[in-house]
Image 1 (cartoon, rainbow, N blue to C red):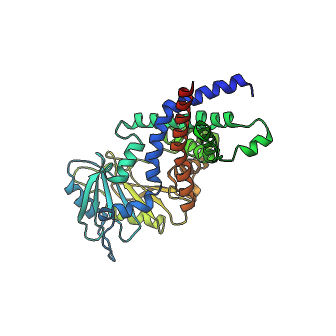
Image 2 (spheres, helix red, strand yellow; image 1 turned 30 degrees about the vertical axis):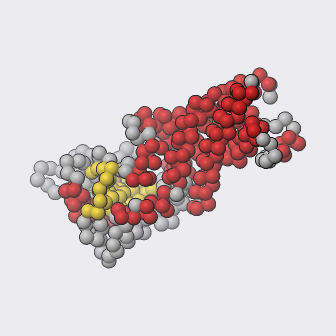
Image 3 (cartoon, helix red, strand yellow; image 1 turned 90 degrees about the horizontal axis):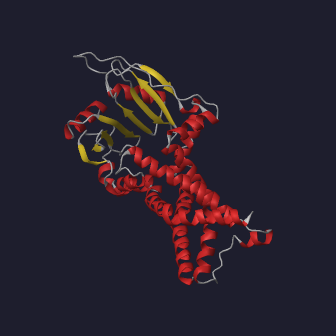
Length: 361
C-alpha cells in the first residue's frame, strides 16, 4: 500500500482513538457487565425476580390489576412472563417503572425504575437512556460505525505486514519488549485477536441503532418490509375488553412450551393486543413468534411464527441476538466478553504509547 495512504489512515485511526475511543471504552465497560446478565440477574436480583412455586398461577388480569393499584395513573407498556415456576411477572408502565408481582398469590413483591439495580443501571448507561431514545441511538450507532470502519478496517490496514515472514511474527506477543515498544506490540496483537468479535459487535449494533440499516437488510435479502400491525375492534363505552388471561392461553397454544411471553396492551382504542413468544426449540433467545388478538373479542387476528418469517426478519433477529450474547451459549458469551474486553486494552495501549511517543519527542 502507498505509504502516504497508510499514513493518512494511521492519523485518522490515532486521533479517532484519542476521542471516539474514549466513548467506545465507556460502551465496552458497560456492555461487559451485561454479557452474563441472564445468568447473574436472577441471583443478584433474587428478591424481586424469584417467587414461591405453586401449581396454578393467578390470572394475568388479577396480576395486572394489583400492579396498577401499586403504580396508578400510568398506562401499561407490557407484561413480561417467563416460563419458570419461580419467576415473578413483570408489569412495565409507560414511565419505565416496573412492578414485580408474585404469580401465585398475585401480591406485589417490589417496584422500581426499569433502570434501577445493577443491570438496569448498566443497560441505561450502555444505551444512553439517560438521554432521549433518538439521541442515545445516534450516539451508540455512530460509535459502532467508527469501530467498524476506523478501528477494525483501518486498524487491519495499518497492521497488515509487508511480507509472509513478518505476517507470522505479527501474531506473537513479545514479552521481552519494554515501554512503548511493548505497548505497541500488545496493541497490535490484541487488535488482531479480537477483530472478528469487534466486527460482529459493531455490525450487529448498526441495525439496532438505525432504522434505515434495518430496512437495508430487508432490501438486501429481498424480503418485504414487515406488514403493519392488524387493527382490532373498538371497545364501546361500558363494554369490557377481552380477558388478558384468555389471550395469553390462546397465545400459549400457538407456541407450546414458550420460554418467554411478552404481552403489549393496545396503545389506543381499536389497536390489537400484541403477544410475542420464544419457543423452546428456537435457535436463539431473540427468535420471536408474534401474535395479534382483538382487544374486544380476544379473537386471533394474525400469527407470524418465527420459523416461517422472512429472511430479513431472521437476519435482523440474529444480529440482535449476536449483539446481546444470545448466540453460541456460554461459549459465545465468553468469546463476546473477551472480545469486548479487548477495547479497554486497545484504548489503554494506544493512548499510553502515543503519550510516551510525545514525551520522547
